[in-house]
Length: 281
Image (cartoon, rainbow, N blue to C red):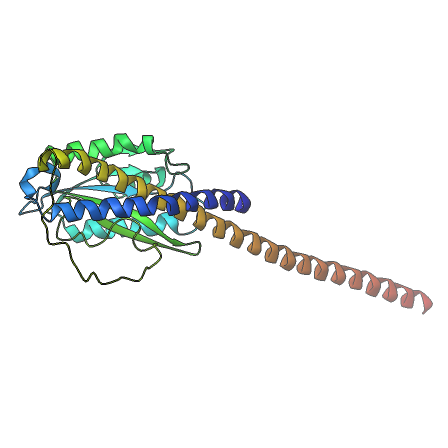
């Protein structure tokens, strides 16, 4: 299981590393554009004065034997639910069987549940989830959409996070998906900043209608890739620890068995010696 998890981890890490630059550039482009247009131009930029209804996307795995991977992200999601308070109506969309089971045990309402996605994520499998989130928020059924996932930092480090997915350009949105696991790059100071206002063709609204839904889908897909890489990494090290513990247990049991066997042999020798001494008398 360790070897299988290691093989899947290498594939998942490759997918995460390949998609991060695209995801980051898409995020920066939309944030740059969103800062120069009115929030009323698109429903995905709608800012609510009061947050009464929240949709939470929870990414977990379908299987166990992954160390603390599922436990950590579920604890983080439940902590966020408690932080929002009882006055906020919270619905969850669970991607992964373990998260759905945990939400049912916590008696947390589940709007939808998806399985068999995180093991080998494909973009076309994420599209229905992205469309559902976009439709629910655009229809003003929710004031905010949160994304609970595990950010892949390295093979030995994964960090559970809760980020604000919608509205786009919200005040709490300080980082994009995958920003923690990304290799830091030196920032160069722009000596000649571009002060010219952007030009939209054909109109700002039509441009936003095209790019904002794609951004949401990209962010959800990137989060699923991060979660998949984190899951396989955690499972690989969990299986390695299990193998090491099993080897230590075998050594301990072998030592105990040899002690018992030696004690039995010693006892038999003592009995034979005692019997012989009794006959000689």
